Length: 156
Image 1 (cartoon, helix red, strand yellow):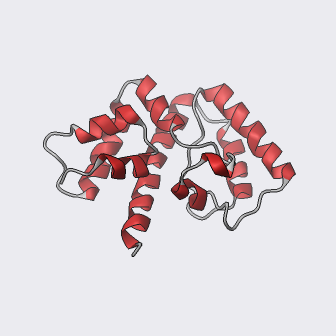
Image 2 (cartoon, rainbow, N blue to C red):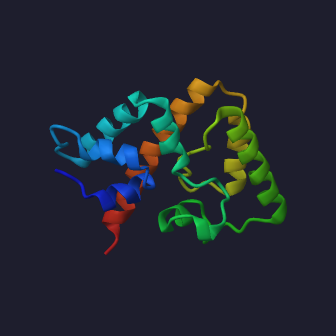
């Protein structure tokens, strides 16, 4: 099984060097489960600049709706979870603090949680160690991709 680049870009927010690595897997993965297992290993072992590129390929929580992919739009709940100006300021401040502290974006598998809940989680993660947070974020990149594939394949 050799997934098409366009599909990988949908799943991984078009992180070019990471997608290049997945395209070059040898032997090619035999299933999506194998691809995700190898993708996680790859994400955790690539050079840090590529890890940060992969994390930063995902939009900020609460980014302008016009700046996110269609999949991120639904995942972040723009269609069902209106954001107030107060919550938007909080998300912007948390994103700034997180990125300033860790040097990469906060990525989390939203999994139906509201942006208010995600803001609380982001605030809690500000107390974590950078290495721990980077690994958690990279693993969540893979969780997001798995979830996206399920939604894509269930569409008519």
